[in-house]
Length: 357
Image (cartoon, rainbow, N blue to C red; front, side, top):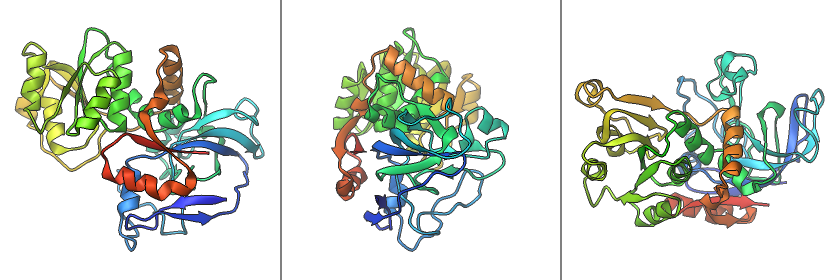
């Protein structure tokens, strides 16, 4: 089969790989949709001779695409189970099952893994599909059976691919604060994670203020449910949010861009006792803990992707609220057009792309 790899220097190479065969505890899915993620750009842009350009938060290095042979990219998988390895109960996986894949696999036995959070496994550096193990930018993908999450019949494969990373990430972050119709939330950054956050927060009943420096993305945010939009290049974001909230500030903020100014503004624009949730990975920044946080009784929370349980909940929530999760994808690509797809993603001006099979 053919698979997409990143040799570095903003290049995509489609290579031939053997079709995968499942071992004990593993399954193979036939991929139907595989989303493109902004985090892929770290590998796409990396110099070809950089053999250790990523580190885990724990400080342990893990191998890149070029350290042990080419790795198939793609960590937003959705498809159908077509082969099952030994030792897997039918209640875990069955042929023909429509599934999303949680793209981390840890030790399976620590507290974090057993509660659906293998990305923060306590005993090992987790396998990450599309990074340290073959991902979904290919016709077939092998994965651990415990990473499967059933895709509701009412959702498309594209919707499942969205939930498998960006949309699931924003949903998990919002679940930490539980916004409702009495709340105003300012969402910083309207890339795929921010747009899906706007979509879900509006469905939860919250009044959404969307912020981005791209007029095109702000227009998309309005279509996704934002009632107000702010371009921080054109106006002071903190002052604008206060004007829109009777001088008090937002109840909640969700920061998805990782931009230092946005991180600071996401704290400063909150009302007293407000909460900021951070998912964007960017440059270090400084926040005045005394004046901006402690004296104003501000809460701050980090949110790192999602658990398998929250992934399932996101699918059910989307069905029950009639949310068109797949609409986050503005561009659909065939596998052979992956080079064009990542060239467009690298410009970071439009919506989100997905490879469909």
